[in-house]
Image (cartoon, rainbow, N blue to C red):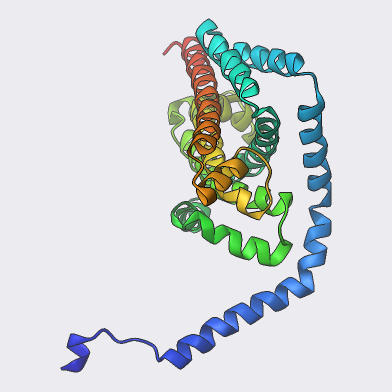
Length: 296
């Protein structure tokens, strides 16, 4: 009855050999293809460095003006704009401007990458139940696996730097936009699709003229969640060379600097609230506009 009292386990030596085999195999893969993968991501690195320098070196009034205009376009709410401008002025006043610009650069590029990759995947998932059944477990793993685990294979493959951090952030942040794009397109009323088909609409006309416009509120909700998750990953990504607000937070944790960690943590919170309010307001306005167009 010993098997009933103690769960069967692999022999220690066998388990050690298995772990060693996995590590050696991945290291061999990294040595063989690592340089080629790094070369592939070089354009992304150059663009990230250029964009970060642009934000840091640009006059601060111009940056705040552009952000205020974007906030107005997104929210059309004077309180959101006032809060956005005040937050960035306070960030600059407390000496966190450069770190905030670095964080803005990586979050902006990460969001663009997630949108350009995630939305097409979500569209293909909405077309195929079989593809959805394959992709959903992958997304489940990506959303539940501890964020630190992302760093191990990325660092082994690409080393420490901006691009590995960006890739880790994208992997962590992309699932919401894939899921919500798929959901939004699947929730489009079948009667609307049948009506478009009766008028002779092709698949591309249905997709771009009916499904995507009606799914935009869900898609923007996915963009919102992607930005929030990317900001949440900033501190962890700073462990592998990503500059920004995560670096002072990590230093504060290591050295028990309460004020440093609190100020930079609040700056991350301020960015999260700003992005959240703007994207939510834009999504609500878009939804009302679409409902009025379709007489809902």
